[in-house]
Amino acid sequence: MNDRFIARLITGVSIFVFVVVVILQSKVLDIFPDKSAIPEWVFFLPKLNAFINGTCSILLLLSLYFIKKKDIATHKKLNITTFVLSSLFLVSYIIFHATGIKTTYGGTGVIRTIYYFILITHIILAAVVLPLVLFSFQKGLQMQVEKHKKLVRWSYPIWLYVTITGVVVYLMISPYYTF
Image (cartoon, rainbow, N blue to C red; front, side):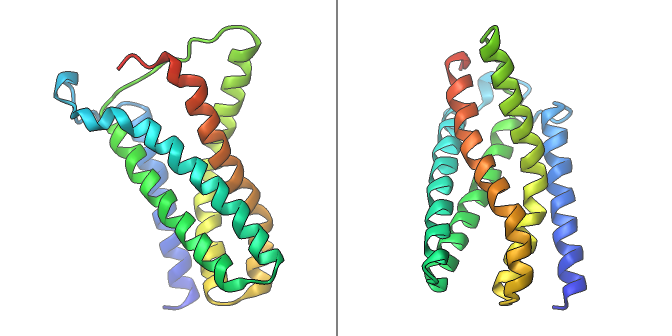
């Protein structure tokens, strides 16, 4: 596959995922209009997602540690594992939000402002990070080290922020779950 095809594929996948998430957030698609029909295991997904995000945060920090030690093989394995887990997160996230379940944050005052700041930056950066990570992976797997490093200067901190804030958002909103 040539670079142009891969770039188009990454762009297409990124746009597709973004559109699906926007549709789910706008509640245009609700595959379970009867909430009593939602399978029980679906209610565990937010906790699973927080666990996956927390695990990804740790793996990303370990990945940084090993690349600083020049252990490219371990760095690559950790990043592939993190990418697989992040992909599982995305599937789980889509399944949960396809149910139409909605939770409103109940905090007040300054904590409410903090929550929404974290949530909004998390959402925006989550949309931005997917193509950055995919392009970073492409350059890394092709051993185009200089191009990989240039991309990772942006993708790594954003990806780490998104995984950490995913856990924070879960911890802040989970007391308000009504399911």
